[in-house]
Image (tube, rainbow, N blue to C red):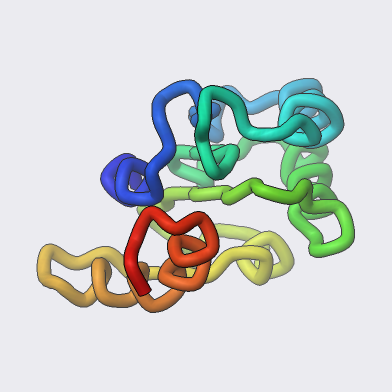
Length: 130
């Protein structure tokens, strides 16, 4: 996930990183209601939210709020949410539908899938020649 973020041209100042197990409803509301409503800082083309081990969200309220904020009508502009999971089968189906899923493998499959999805974004910001 961090390599993908690096390849998107985002410095550490444009990334907010959370462990899903420690994510609180106040964090979700602040991030989506304030932090990510601002333009990306420090020359970053995007704001990035990295949620590690999404299957470890403990609170149903956090899960519900995150689902709401990740819906198309609520998503802030210039925000990419990257979530990792070791077991997507335990995740709420409605939450999963808000993500494009890339099964990770040690081979080139993951990188190729990401390139297809993110190429239009990269071209838009012109840090990759199209």
